[in-house]
Length: 441
Image (tube, rainbow, N blue to C red; front, side, top):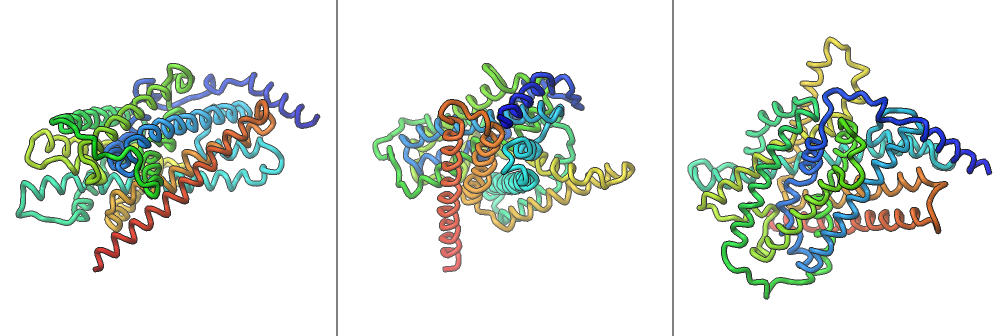
């Protein structure tokens, strides 16, 4: 009876408070800009790794798996945002970020989980930082790989390892990452989306340039490679770390969920682009694919050259959006300790140090395919699947629906996330060890 009274009291509080009416956002973003940011947060190097993912799974499993993972990722974003809104109403706060949502859900959940609220928040912050540092490392390597191919081909007198190109892009990345507001980053996201779409069209131009022969293409691939497929798809579909900053910065946040909505439009576009390029890219290039399909394009044609330049520019302009998540967490914990007179200089230096750290890791581990799989398997599985499932279950503990369907649904998502994490990391680590073994022979 006491639990039921608590639930009714919370529902009454939620009905009385509308967080949107109390939300004051500096430089709010429109629905269009928010959609652009959300699409760009997911689509990038992951899109171009789609054909490689299909070669691991086979084209039949690839199509079904892509649709399934796309739906699952969209659903997890939906329940995270919905839970965050419920927590805002209970806490009577205008907005909460990812970690604050986790903490609030545990604090307002059943008694047995309340002592773990602070631990849930810390774990979420750690997962966010780890994920987006990994993404920034991948972006550094992808930009450098694309430019290195062009320089090696057209300036043969200058042959430099990919690590040198990472260092060359260090300064422009440091400058670009000084942008402070998502509204301004949306301009670069739109530019990045245009370059990415142009690259997508050029890839289709080469894919359909001659008749496709699918007779030797696998419908079902080697089951041992399925974890690598799932890891790559999760990496490509997930942009959940950017979701709460994007939703919190919207001029009309009520338009983020629903039908039609920012989330629905963004996820539909992401699934369409990924599945079409993955499927037809595999049909064209088979099992000889590299980490990014642009690395398989011919080096002597101008369209292919443009594609390599466009993808480098697209990833370059996306980099500050991914880095925004990392720095936002850093700023949240340090802002109160820095005097107002020194904040601007301190945060400029901090952004430079952060970019240098990410580039340094990229230099140390320039294995593009393996880093993509590892980030997708480990970090995005935790951030995009496991945490949202746990948080919604805890928050709705007294309202799990008929036959506790919310609990069983989230348990399946949790198990899928854990399975993806373990199997994906295992396969990727074995791949890395095999590559290192070959280099030492």
